[in-house]
Amino acid sequence: MAIPASNSPPDPTPDPTLVAFNRFGLGARPGDRDRIAGDPRGCLKAELRQPDVALIPLDDPAYAGLLGSTPAIQASMAANVQRKLDRERMAAAQPAMATASIQNMPAPVQPKPVQSTPVRVAPVQPMPSPAAPPKPAVPPVEATLFRAEAQARFDKALRADAGFVERLVYFWSNHFCVSVAKDNIVRASAGAFEREAIRPFVLGRFADMLMAVERHPAMLFYLDNQQSIGPDSRAGKNRQRGLNENLAREIMELHTLGVGSGYTQADVTSFARILTGWTMAGREGRLGEPGSSVFNANAHEPGDAVLLGKTYPAGGMAQAEAALNDIASHPATAQHIATELARHFISDDPPPAAVARLAKVFAKSDGNLRALASTLIDMPEAWSTPLAKMRSPFDYIAAIRRAVGPGPANDPGQSLGWLNALGEPLWQPPGPNGFSDQADSWASAEGMKVRLDIAWQAARQVKDIGNPSDMLDAVIGPSASPETRQAIARAESKQQGLALLLMAPEFQRR
Image 1 (spheres, rainbow, N blue to C red):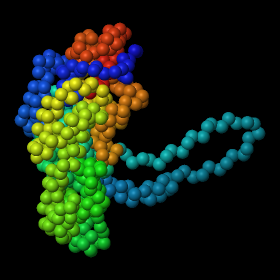
Image 2 (tube, rainbow, N blue to C red; image 1 turned 90 degrees about the vertical axis):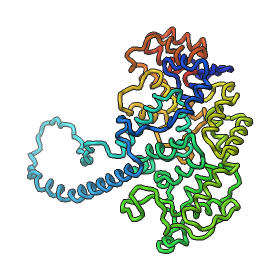
Image 3 (spheres, helix red, strand yellow; image 1 turned 120 degrees about the horizontal axis):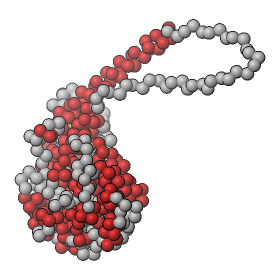
Image 4 (cartoon, rainbow, N blue to C red; image 1 turned 60 degrees about the vertical axis):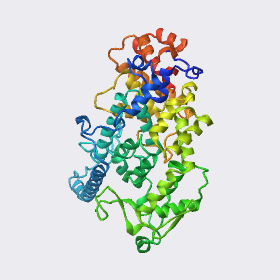
């Protein structure tokens, strides 16, 4: 199968409709290009105006399995207690089982005299390994919640008009990431975290999203703030425990100001003191409803605090809220967010003028994210810069599903498996800095081989393909190169032609 060269140069004058679907959105579905061809910018702006466009409608019966973060965490806590009881019960039963096994052993057999002629001996069978614990009859509650949230995310991607708002959701969810690899608590609540702390604010104020993210139980647990105790607080003196600076450091380094913005280690320590007391209520419910975000006054460091040259008077939870609001509007935050957005939507090395415009809009609009998104749409650089970035794994899987169909009904398993194979497991980044947004992170030879395997699997699942060349026109349009068109036209089968389309540079790039 001749695969169109993925390293061929991108179109220097990209088709505006392709820009709308690939750079800003999640890929065209059949019929989408005709729908917006006359006004791609207007289509994107119309998506921004749709009411509640980022929200997942929980009143839809399709999403009946979704829980809020607090009940999801409570379910995980209860399941963890049950698992512990099961382990203890099994451990207690082991001696009795061993005794019974010895008692039931047959009496030893007396050896027979050695025969004088050779005897064929059957090969010795290996001793069976100790019995593994039986697999549960139903998936663990955390896995069930995770898959329901994943299915909701995939559904939302398929139903979006162009997918610009969904792309914004993924950008912010990766910017303020948590990882399910941390613990079952996060696995149970990662989807709810995105629904509660990202989606409602994705077109609102940055400061509001920042506040929702940092006080969310999934983030507090992920970055260990429940372990951070003011050294001079009542709990700190009683337990002789101190600060955990993870949350403070990542807020300043990754979420807001950015590396090299002028803050010091002393600022990190001071901010960690300010954030003490922000925690998640435990299973016993002593601080509040288990699994909810609470403020533990006994763990909060008392007294005034100095951060970035400003003194914040003692005030419990309000002290950290005031600090977060100031950091949200800091000029370094505007610059950091502008750079990240321009890198994501325009190029790995974003034009300085574009970054400057975004930073200016951020500062003038008090961090209005709808205004930032609209500014991105209006930027000439967004429409003139060649489509040279590689689609991230999630963007690629979403584009495939939008182009050829949703795959197995109500089962996210295959899409989740594809994401794992591509190195971007859902809600499981390698660290608090999220998944890379650089093109070369996803363009390795091994990664392209995996994409080819996925393209083949997706093509084989389509029952009625039609003419792959017609689908090329429907999802790529005039930007398809002569090499891509020729490869698809000469394919030995419709499935091969569709797989070639899904591997084409014009399909892979954004």
